[in-house]
Image (cartoon, rainbow, N blue to C red; front, side, top):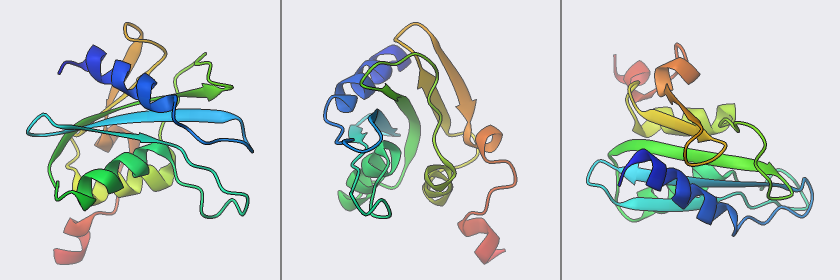
Length: 136
């Protein structure tokens, strides 16, 4: 699966978002090193704290299925299901990525299949805290 197809999958995942409070719907498509893709959407909660982002939903689904090696993730989102700009992962999601991914892990943020930017995890989370910090 190429980057454009991964972005398309993120848009499909966005359709399942449950966002009755903020109105922001987000979709993520996470690719493992073996090429398998896990989708995630944001799931809000009236208590706000239990809300889960699309990126973490995708990671948790993958990890719960035994996956531990990832190559890239595509993220899309916007108010009312309309994507008007790049939607980047929050700090908590970046921290979850750092738990399972190296600094060269690709984060694709997109407005559509042709208009996207690619960042590495190191670029989005400079000097991030990872399992390496505990074992070194």
